[in-house]
Length: 233
Image (cartoon, rainbow, N blue to C red; front, side, top):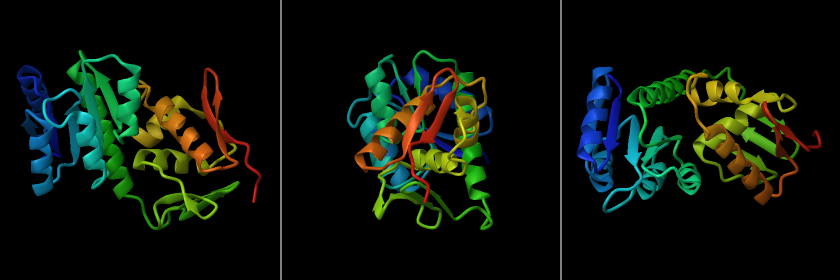
């Protein structure tokens, strides 16, 4: 059997279409017409990936995402009929891994699902030989504690933000293209169009500032990002 996916959307036609499309690719799919029903099922038997519509009766997708993220770091993809920047920012801030605006091609969703599940498998396959600690300026990443510290204080990062920042801390003087970060952190290739890198780094930048770090995220226009402003220790 394939990876288990839970899908919640109150629109029956969309729910059935996506269920059929994902199941035909070998995934084990359970569909729900509400976020509350999905949450109840997840509490009994967790899935390996969740797809949530934002606008649903009862508990909406953002609240469900927040609840799931409090107990699990599984990949979460949010769906919405609104092409709203606020919805996008809210979705990423609640801990989702990516976002799709309706209408979208099911093939795009499938590409994102494959990439996110591949990333999970890669994370699980990491060996003890991987770097346990990274330092740059006043930041310290600890693989053992699964956290980034500014001095002695933990920087409050989501798992995706932690994965992205720790990747950049491996070569802090390097300029990273969006394409490299998408491939390394999300597992997406160049065919997947997404703003998830930009929004995730915007949130990391804000959290480093709130933590009082001397390290910041610098935008390299037309290319990508790099870390800067740290005094080497």
